[in-house]
Image (cartoon, rainbow, N blue to C red; front, side, top):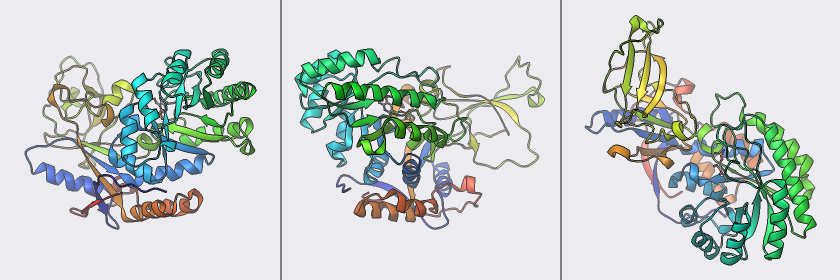
Length: 460
Ligand SMILES: Cc1ncc(COP(=O)(O)O)c(C=O)c1O
């Protein structure tokens, strides 16, 4: 049952024929006539729904657990909770956030292998039982603070080809895994399964195959020692956008046969995945519209012969790497602006760099990008800014985090309500969702309409 009774969040209904891009234009009009021209987001919640279906289609045996760390916005968490997703929480605050929304403890995994004792106690008091570990010290802490916990042993992977490595920090080797299982037995703790993470931005799907095979070895060790091993958590690592060499479905096409080989359907093993990037970064349409160019200057000493008239431009905008663009520093993200004004066909391009608003030289969003000349007050859009953006944004130098405006189409909303009442039936709904007008006009080429939409406040 998906019933949630907490605070409301506001979103705008997209009427038929209108898209998130229309809202974006509408907001730009509103903001442009005010003095405060702050950066803002437009987030299409219908896209979260669409991704959820895409997920089930690509990995039908795997239950998604959303890693709250990547974006803890209440609207996102509530939408996913309504869809029946589980949640991967790394702290007491994240557990409280999802529980306050009404998520039952069985749908939460406390997936931080090194936890503070007081936070383990909080999990115990809140009924959260599933939690990961990778060391003897952690086992001893759990034995003291939460002896009824259902433990999941995190194993290390070969994440040398991932964009962001995680096994440098977490994960037991196979040899250590045996010792840990034996120690858990001595401490009378319950181990129910294995988790791993191949590193975020995986570039080689074979890493999953090796990790799944290693997990099988640890399952066998556990079973031999008398544990009832029934949970496999295959972590994250999926691409954050479509413009990558290795696509989401190319990875899942390798994972599915590996799961069937090492964990056959009839083995009764529950497989879950604590994902982040795939759910938001890649697929959700977050559009950050940045504010104005406050300075254009000619850079002296440029020896780049391709620059138009030797001119390069520097734009200073009102969000940067200390704000939502922290993904550039932390996640090696590369972002590209889309211009709000369509350039004239014969307009020349200049080599430009784009800088954030703080007084720090590190605060550069784009090192070099060719685009037509902008004027102060022109807007840039940055798409796919959902995961690992606002969640880690600071207010360094006094620059506030951007406001987020949520939108959803009526068919997406109706489908959500249906799921809320009847539960999630992936195969039946898949047909319907593919026809939902969930994406943005920018891509579909639909002309923009001013003032297209009615604002609503609804409890999801
Ligand atoms: C335990 C765990 N699960 C899931 C994730 C999300 O992974 P990704 O961002 O690659 O989807 C992370 C990322 O740090 C993690 O540590």
